Length: 283
Ligand code: PD2
Ligand code: ZN
Image (cartoon, rainbow, N blue to C red):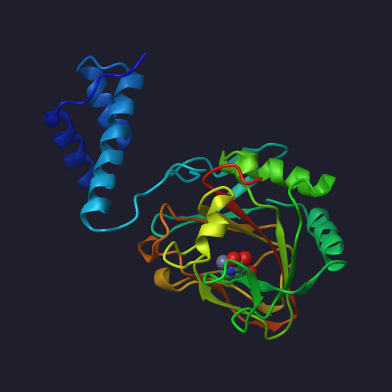
């Protein structure tokens, strides 16, 4: 059954509540008191917000926002059951949308991923937005490799766990990328989405659409340095073995605030596994 459309007055009231920062649960509760069913109220609020964001984006010549994984709610549980593993929510920032997860991988899983990746690792290419090809680049002095999705039982287990944690289809995920940074190696600040204005984006977007979120999993703890930095948020996430930093971007635009980089490793080495989530199936 389709839900009734909100009237212009109701839309205006929903938007006023959103601007005032009212919890959406309070908004739907007030609608229930007016005789709306719960599902119809949720649909009306979501529709109003989506249409408002879309018309705002169009008026300002910005890309239209798309759905992204939303793994946690505000002030929600500190522990999440992500398939076969209990994961901690260590920190959460609303803008840019960044979440730090603890205990995503067991130490043995981190060690095993490093051992599997080590055999195939080479100097990391960077996606070239002009050609759509991967190229060697000074901005990224790490070495890396990609596992195809489900390349081995460990990757398959980790992918299923990530899909459960993020509540995002497993098929929308790229294969895991493993990077190794030696002493002094870094990854200069960049965005993970494909810049649609660059000619190379078309090739990348054909397979699964845009990237909408990233999950950088720390496979070891460097002795010093190697934080993942978010310059716009003045945030540094410390690389701790088994933990992960998640960030989402609902449109390919700097307004998402998701500029991020890998700070130089000062002592020791740093290993990460990055998972990128697409809008659609990435086959
Ligand atoms: O290793 C990191 O901290 C890092 C930083 C920025 C990884 C990536 N980007 C990435 O894999 O895109
Ligand atoms: Zn990145």
